[in-house]
Length: 194
Image 1 (cartoon, helix red, strand yellow):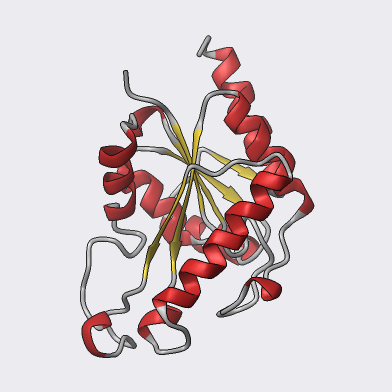
Image 2 (cartoon, rainbow, N blue to C red):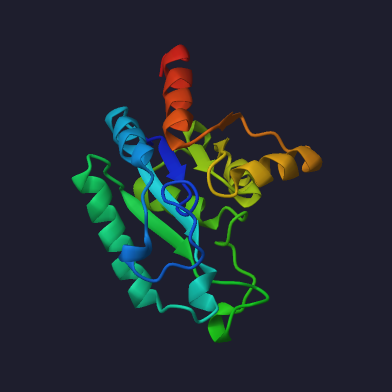
C-alpha cells in the first residue's frame, strides 16, 4: 500500500537561507525542524527533502561535496529525533548552468520530477502527500505533483506570499514556520480520520 509523504524544501524551510552553502558548518537548522520532522515521521509520513541546488550547476560546489553536506544534514536531523527518508536535489539551471548542467530538466522545481522519482522509489501516494516550502516554486511543485502545498513565512516566504497572491495561486495553508506547518498538516489528517 502506498504511503503518504511530507516533502520539504531545504533552505529557508528546514534551515536558514544562506545562499549557496557548500559544507555542513554553513547550515543552521531551525530549532522547530526537529520537532516537526519527528512528529511527521511518528505520524507515518515518509519525510523527503526536495531541493533545487543550482550551485552545483553554476560551479560553486561539486556533487560530491553536496552529497557530504546532505549526509551530515540527515545525520544531524536523525540525532535530533527527526529522521529523513531521502534527499533529492536538482543540480541543473537552464540559463546559468555550466556544461552538462545547463539544461531544461524535469527535476528542477517547480517541475514535479523529484516527487515523481520519490514516488516510484519509495511507493508514495502523491495525492495523500504534502509539500512545505518557502518559495513560489515550492508551491507550484506541490501542485504539479498533486500534493497539498503549504507555504512557510521563513526564508523567502513573506515575499513568496505576496508573489503567490499576485499570481492567484493559493497554498492550502500559510504557516509562520515548519513547526506550525506540520501541526496544521497533522490536524488536517486527524480531522479527516487518516
